[in-house]
Length: 146
Length: 146
Image (cartoon, rainbow over all chains, first blue to last red; front, side, top):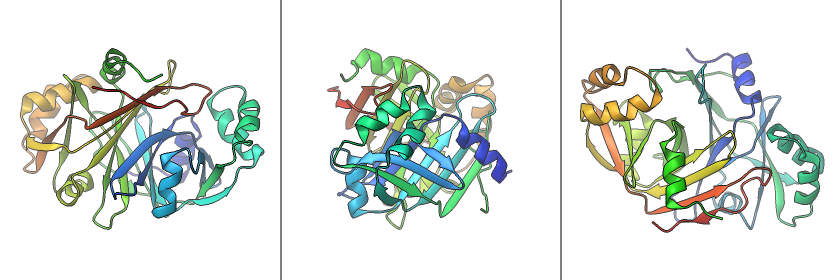
């Protein structure tokens, strides 16, 4: 069974990392763990356009795939595809992302906002796949209509 | 600082999921959580060549990127790139992978081995990036020479 929208919201509200996949300039896959914030059906990320491969990749190939999974019971996963919109790095958004991952998000955001190539990305998924799994590997993945 | 080879072995011995990124037939990124086994400098995975998108993608684009991260302290991550070698699904290898993720790996492997398109993938990474991170987002990623 796919997860309901409420179950997806619940998983994505937990302070997991996402694994953010892009295509590099040679057409090969790249993936990295990244902080995220899920709010009202949209992902928010932050990266740097120059210093980070992830940020540079988006210039040549806008498509992104994102994977989030719980490694403890109940085992659940969400995969989303979309094209992030790149926006200026508002300190309030940076802090909202960083605060999911520990104390001191405002301090981190204040520093990050001074980085000249720091950006925020907003992504409303084109598709979301979700599933519950345990001793079933990742069988049973299903599309959830949003 | 990058992790030492011993620290990489230690992280990858923990029962994390990996997030396995490929390129789909349209040249877009795909990523999904996947079981893995790390042994003597090689990743072992299992998938299905027909039923799973991941397996099908490898037919057209052999390059893979893999991301593993701890979501609890000490925060560490490893990213590996390579081209998996696709091998027949030996039950002993399937069980060794599945047993990392709970009891009953042999039973799971016995069933999985009967699936006509079940394969094992062995990947010796071409590159490995690793880092420790905490309130530093993912700054400080470094290449580890193997």
